[in-house]
Image 1 (cartoon, rainbow, N blue to C red):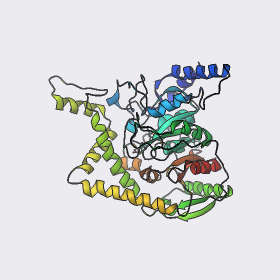
Image 2 (spheres, rainbow, N blue to C red):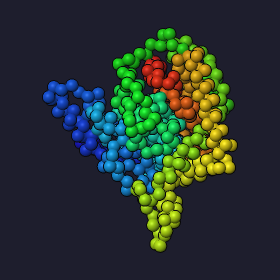
Image 3 (tube, rainbow, N blue to C red):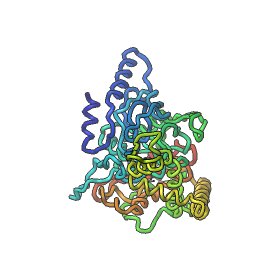
Length: 454
Ligand code: GLN
């Protein structure tokens, strides 16, 4: 009953697309039975979590919040969700998100935006964006509907919504979590990760989600580290880099102050703080908004009205007309924008000028980080350039929306682990997040620095 009440409390937030309390109840009952039998409890025994709707869940509709996948019920379970069930967790439901994970405010969902549970304390009553694309996940955890939720992060979709709602979220090194059964956006960037109330819960969930999967060619064949048991908020002997180029023009004073406060906390925890340079940072956002749409245009070619979900077949239509009608009706505006950008930058005449160039920039960005690791163990930056904005505020201006990702995309392009942890509030009492970026495979240092801030 508690699960049904919890999920129904979430209704005004529009965080859930599908409610599955029976799944959570079954996990809770299994945990009770194990406890009664004196068996050792699994790491997530009976824990009810929310599942971003980008994960395919067997026999439960999975739409990526797009009309084009309405009616699609997978006959298989994503590797990451299966791992969570194997660890004892249960599912409260499928969480709303930006359509195909494209967006930073959850407003591109075909099923309506999510509303953040936060309100400004200065009299401004506007409903706020929960961030995106994992906006259902951030809202459900922030509103204490679920103790944890899955997210996916292609250019910031775990970190930015975590920052906007005062929770924690980590994107591990690319390849740690299997992409098998996760509806693809940009395959060279997509990575799953947990969103939860604190750093320890993130570590516990991440351990359950991580691991080699032969069904994903980019999955890393490495043992799963014991991050939780090794958590250590003392940073003695660690060096924290502060990248000069993240001090962007027009950065609000409260974000500067947040960053400075973060530096001091890490120093108090024993770290040495050093300035570093990531000279190609300013090219990361434009490179991301070429590479991600290019991959998306290719990945989304599979939605043809034949294989999954929606089919629009006007009277007398031929195959070509059926494709066109289905895609015109099924994809939202932002998804179409990405497909058009992606198709353009991959076209014969423009491939070298845009796509090849963006890939070169990506390499330079990865090299910037490699050079920085000579001087430090982790990097500290703000997660986002502002606190949560009002719903509707940036919806008409795609570039303003894309600018929100300025601090999160560089680590995505380089495949690095990165985490957002609450760092303070702005003048209106809204949460602000600090981002820790780590060396490849060094999630432990990322979690430890986040713990020192928390
Ligand atoms: N906001 C970014 C975008 O729209 C990142 C999304 C994501 O990480 N899935 O592409």
